[in-house]
Length: 347
Image (cartoon, rainbow, N blue to C red; front, top):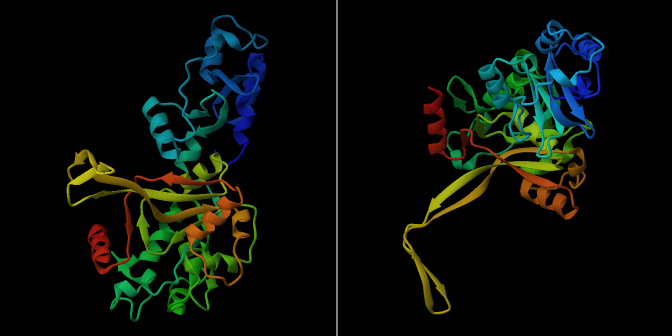
């Protein structure tokens, strides 16, 4: 669903079998999606449906409506590639229309596309310039992103996971002991990717280094902190961002905190109710983002800026800022105890 090629399988309900056959042959997608005005879903037709129609005495000039499968399996836009793949494999089908709440067809997942990682031309920026002071003495002679987790540095885990999802263009923002990171990764050729570097003369925060980007494209960029280890699907995050027409998307985790004491709720001096060690739930910043190029215009070259400030500036300019609720395993490796957890999990 990474481009608009799926639109060639959308056919109006008034078409003939001949037109449906032509669409099947030209698209190679093994399905046509039948719609009415406004791309509202009527149903689907497969090669098998057409063959069965011909066996019943229809000919290629017959209208398509009598063989349309009107209870076709569909998927809503909030469900991503992984769920689409599960549904298709469980139901032994090759394609799955994406339909919004108004029953409007807005995309199509195809099995062949999901089995082969979609190539992602978007740039992924990894913030790898921090000193990692809380991880001292581990970071006295080694930049935090190069600390070993399992058999490789943290930063390599991030690059390899993104590469497996089709990302090939990486920019590493470096500062503290940055030469060690550059020596380790080079231009990325040994990993089958392209890597360039942003060199911070002084720490610019979790967003400020983006002001140093010189290669401008129209595509949104993925940004992640270099000390965040997660099983998040970067491609699904990008698709989610695009489906919601956002300017900036922040991945968030649900955090639960239990109050250590019983809480007394009051109104004035009157007791309203008692709550025994209540649990507070909130969303916390997971350190992974998608940004449109327009958002980067809120950065001044060389200015220190953290990501929440950049999101606030975008929101002030009435640019849509949204969250991507994630459930995947996630670890911010900021303290020695976090590093030990990451290393145990990698063993």
